[in-house]
Image (cartoon, rainbow, N blue to C red; front, top):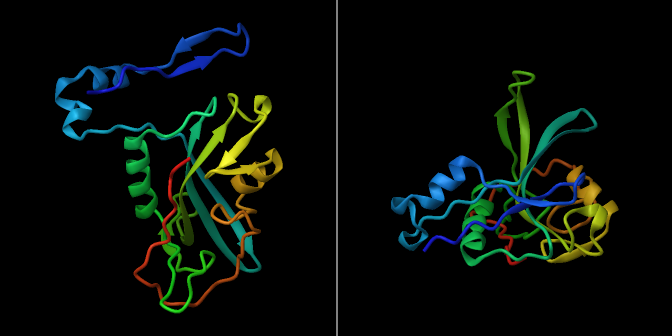
Length: 190
């Protein structure tokens, strides 16, 4: 059975809570043909983070999807399963038969609608960002994929200055390696 709607928004001006379901969301939730009991799962997308970066003379773009959880909320089993599939689908960082380095991998070539030119795209998958409060400003704790982080680290992650998987500085070198068939999997358990 489809869960009752429970997402609310907090007004920073009047400090009240109100439901934040869209008309389309309400329609999906109340449509008996789209019941979760039949294996149907709808997840809203929180934040796509996309950045153009330059390393020497090479220009490329970085992309990841970030699921936000507030008030220390956890993913449901259905969300975890769906986001795990999305994570595998949107990664292009692969290990090789001789090296399992999450920094290595082959980038995709995509056409930028902004420049009209082909650019190198590094897809970093799906990540879960949890706040103990409603956001960075009112949270005593922040977690990135179950790892405790600071506000400064969060900023660096969103800028793609830190690797979203390892929290180490991103290695911008171009790795000339053949792609393996093994996908780096991020366990979405946060």
